[in-house]
Image 1 (cartoon, rainbow, N blue to C red):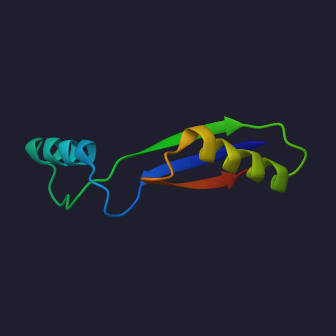
Image 2 (image 1 turned 180 degrees about the vertical axis):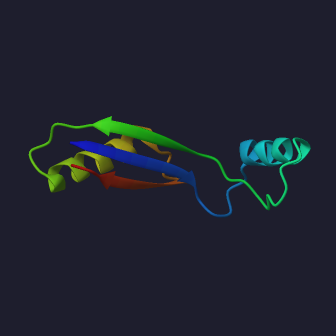
Length: 80
């Protein structure tokens, strides 16, 4: 089955890369950009027995590797 893990910085954590992107968008003349926060997306194919097992395995992967849980949040979405 396919899954998507989205990792973003927690609110209140400074995001220098997001600020740089925001500045670049404004310098390119793209109007209406208030602020930018950047993150990471992982598309993962997992061969777990069921949806619950896949979600558990992916949460474990996030806690151990994919996300720095001190400063980042993560969201796991399981497809078919």
